[in-house]
Length: 600
Image (cartoon, rainbow, N blue to C red):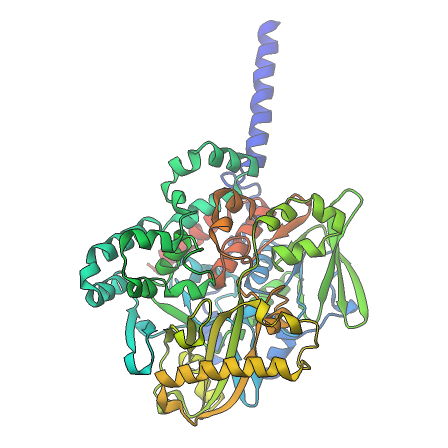
């Protein structure tokens, strides 16, 4: 009898243990094979169809600008996504490919978040997509984008010299061209700074060692939080995955140990403009991830950034979902048990309550906290996490329309990063790019014209006094400040491109307050929570996860993983993984393997 009881007890322990492990460690045991979003491969001829299509603006507007209305909300939703940035669209599309009906709500008048474009006075401008790495045919990012867009987005590779760092004024300008290729950046630096060769070699050895650190971050976000905390506090996380040890070391700290050469440090760290945190505060892991991201060059969507949302939305709609604009979510609805059950959205004076068993926020951690009922937010882990982090820096953008084609003006598909000492800014770096030279269709669509985009990091506090004034109706003092900064920036550009003198026929300027309005960014940031060492401390990494302690509420986008297109995109992958309870990264790698085998 005792033996039977012991056998029963052992069997019970095994069953309960198996259930516990499969429930908590689903990253290793996907729950349901039918939820694999890549079980049926997407068509690979979507980009061919896109090439043959006649561009119809009316049709594009139907997809990208469909407004919220009661009769457009699908019944029996599986999930609601707040925000249509790439993080929100990716999560929604992956859920749709797994058979879920998803509604995406966007507060702006067109879809895409930082992937949207605007047209004014005969010029088209991309507001946030300037170049994307790791988009070569067969790369993991490319396979993912092809899957969620049905292969509909065509990509063009940019110039071999992707970035040029410029130091000094017009009389003493030194240019440092950064070419794409495994060792191009390193070799250029050795050629320009031969006496610092050993320091350069050591730094790029670290870049190579840290190329897989993102994998460690992903695992900490997908394992149960209690288990991730155990691995971190016990020291096992770093012992198992040594690159994680660098997460709280700043870029400046590492470089200071290698070289006293300030100009060399400036050239190595120019990419901090792509995440907005100064080298003295940014983790070296993030910076090395970005260098690796662009090693094989940069890519740009043919037809402009609006192609991204335009090609992904049909995937969401094919499963019965919708993407609706002018729908400002003002509250996440929570039931008596504390579970997220829907949202309250406003369009003008109209208010809509829309329910669904799951709510996914692509609005950023700070906006998400504000959308929760106050008592619920205060009890949530999110509020505690938000207090440990800080808002990213604001951004100032200048959109310039030029008379003349890229060929006539000598413009190439590359970026320039001048350090703008004359502006006396806390972070004196500027980004200059010519989107019209990157898109091979631009000249056909806008003949005889070119565009220039100029961006710099700008403190929100410079413009805070005008925050309560209406957009496009702010007073003359506000206009004077932004025009003064814009003209300083344009003079800096003319030092680089004197042939553009007299070619400017259009100019629109966006301040951090513009980002507050159009992107719903609380303090004008475009990269979400600041990418400093506090955010990349391992406990914060583990807590900045798609799953929350509010049942039914999930996060996606830049605040889940890292900033930028690819960071937000894979934030969507992690979110869909958590919702579906399966390792979608594993599914994606399997899909890429099948694709390569098919091509062979």
